[in-house]
Amino acid sequence: MGFYNELLTFKEIDYEGFFKKIEEKDILRILQQNKLSPLDYLALLSPKASSYLEEMAQRAHQLSVQHFGKSILLYTPMYLSNHCVNRCAYCSFNVDHDIKREKLSLAEIEEEAKAIAATGLKHILILTGESRKETPVSYILEATKVLTKYFDSISIEIYPLETEEYKALMEAGVDGLTIYQEVYDEEVYKKVHLAGPKKNYHFRLDAPERACEAKMRSVNIGALLGLNSWREEAFMTGLHVSYLQNKFMDVEVSVSLPRMRPHIGVFKDLDFVDDRSLVQVMLALRIFLPYVGITISTRERQSYRDHLIPLGVTKMSAGVTTAVGGHSGKDEGINQFEIGDTRSVEEIKEAILAKGYQPIFKNWMQI
Image (cartoon, rainbow, N blue to C red; front, top):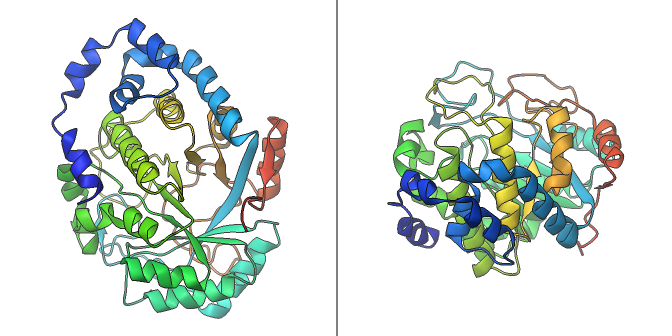
C-alpha cells in the first residue's frame, strides 16, 4: 500500500520516550552530518532541539542557498467553487454549513485569469471543494483549457483522483498537484472527517503517489498543523516527502506548512503551534531534505513570512483571496480560512527584494 507500509513502521514509536533520550551532543552531531536518518530528523523536532534554533537556522540557510539560490517563486490560488459534500470539522466549506455556494462559469474563470495575469504572475493554483457532481473532472479540464492562455504553470488542489484522471488533466495543461493529508494519525483523521468521500484515509494518502505515477511535474503535500501533535505530524510529513523523493526522482516534490486559521467550523480540540514551533519544523525539514521545496502561505502574517524567507522558503503565495471569484471582484463571498498576509503581488515582490532575494514570476527551469 505504498507509503502506508512505511508509516506503519513508525506508528508505535514512543515519541515522549524518544525525546527524553535526546541530548545536546545528539543535536550537535546531527547538525554536522550530510545525510540524516528519519530518527535524526525526529531528533531535530524534539523539545531539546528547540534550544538550538539558531544553529539549525544557520545550517538550513546554508543548504537552501546551496540548492535553491536566493530566489522565491510566486503564485496565487484561484478558487473555482466552494461546493463540497464532505463534513470536515475544521473547514468553512463543510456541507453542513449554511453558506452561499458558488461555482465560476468558464467566462468568470477567464475574468479571474485576466485579473491575476495583470499582476505578472505566471503560476496559478486552482482549488475546489470536493463535489464530483458540481465540479467534475470535465469541468476542471475546461477550466484548465481557459487558464493555459494566461499562465505557464497550472497546479490543482482538488479532491483526490485516479491515475488516469491525473493524466487527462496533464494533457490539458496541468503540471502540478497540491494535496494535503490534513492529518496523518488515522484516529484523529476519523475524528475530524465526519462524513463524505474524504473519510477514505487511504485513497487520499495514496493520491500524491498516483500523481507521480502519472508523471506530474510537481507534487506538493503537507499536514494541517494543529489538528494533532505538531511534532508527530511534521515527522510523518517528512517521511512522506522522503518516500516520494526516493521513489520518483524525476518529480519535483515540495511541502507546505499550513497552520490552522480561524474558520467556520466545529473542531476545537487543537494542538496549538506557535511561531517558534513552526520555525523548528521548517528548519528540521530543510536539514533532513535539502532538495525539498518549502511553501509558506498567506495563512501567516506578513512580518512573520518575511522573517522566514532566509530560513528555507522557496515558494510564496501573493495577492491571495480564498473566496470564489475574489480576484476579479465578482463576489467577496465566504473565505475558506482567514488570511494573515493581505499584501498585493507588488508588495510581496518588494518585501522579497528587501531581503536580498529574487522574486520569480516564471520558473526558469520549465520547458
